[in-house]
Length: 49
Image 1 (cartoon, rainbow, N blue to C red):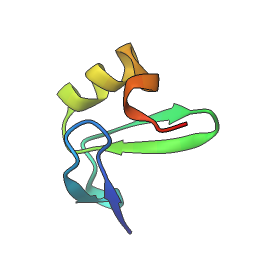
Image 2: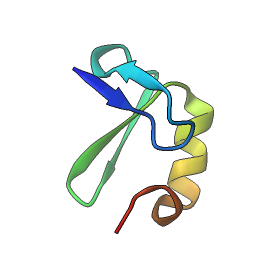
Image 3: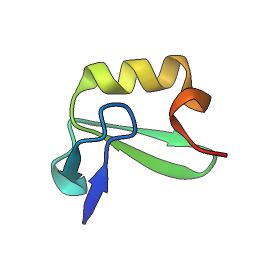
């Protein structure tokens, strides 16, 4: 399934994601571990209300 990395806005395949995080019961997918680190430090900045 195609998903969008919330940090860099890159479209990636969820099965090939470099990293994932759980946020409010939702799995978030990332193109790289650096994007996951940024997201984990401040998830509200990247996830809409």
